[in-house]
Image (cartoon, each protein chain N blue to C red):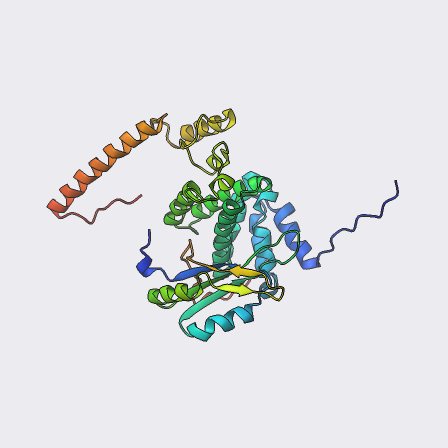
Length: 228
Length: 108
C-alpha cells in the first residue's frame, strides 16, 4: 500500500553525539572516555538536554543504570548544579509516577527507583531521602478520595517499589522477587506472614528501645543515639 | 530526618506548562527578592500529547522565609491566556542539597 515515508526526527549534531555517548558507547570500559567527552561539551548549551537524557535510564539496560549514576558523580565535581538537578529530577519523576499511576509508565518507574538507589551508592542522595521516598511510596494517596485510582487494593505494583504485607496474597512473580530480595539482603531475618505478627514485633521493638533510651538517659550517655 | 526548622529548599510544583522563568521570578521577587540565594527553573511542556507542569526549586536564606513563602504561594492560582487555572503546590524539596557557591571551573 502507498503511504508517505515516515518523517524521522532530526536532532542537532550535538544532541546526536550526546545520545551516541550515553545510549550506545557507554559501558564499564568506556565510562572514563564518555565522562571526558561529556566534560568537553559546551555546558551552558547542553545542560538541559543532558538532564533530559539522564532521565531516560529506562531506555537502556537495567544493569547499566549505575553507570549513569557514576557519570553524575563524576560530573558533580565541576557541575554540582547538574548533579543536584539530576537528584531533584529523579525524585520528581518518582512522585509524578505515584500521582499518575499510569500502567505504561511502570518500567520507567522501576528504573527511576533503581537510579535513586544507585545515586545513594554514589553518595549523591542522603539516607533520609531514601527513607522518606520509601515512606511516600507506602502512604501516597491512602486515605484520600482518589485512593482507588492511585493504589487499588488488587494492584501490587508498588511492591516492586518496595512495600509488603498491606495487600492480600501476592502474585507468584512478586513473591519470588521478595524471596530473592530477602535472601540477598537479610538472610537471617525472620519474615512475618501476617500484619498481626508484625505489629507484635514492632511493639516489642518499641518497648525495647524505650527501655534502652531510659537506661541511657539515666546513665547520661545519650550521644550514641541510633544511626542507621 | 532533617527538622523542618532548618530546611530551606522548597519546590514549586504544578506551575503552568508554558509559564516563562521571567514571569515567575517577577512574581516571586515582588515579595521575596533578596531572600533566597538560589533558584532554578524547570520548564514544563505544553504539547497536547505529553503535557507536563513547570517547576522551580528555591533555596531561601532563612527557614522562616519558607513559611511565609508557602503562605503566599501554596494554592496560588496561575491563569493562562486560555483561562485554564493551575493551582501551585509548595513543598519542602525531598533532597535539601543545593549547589556549592564556588565550583571549580572545569579545565577539561
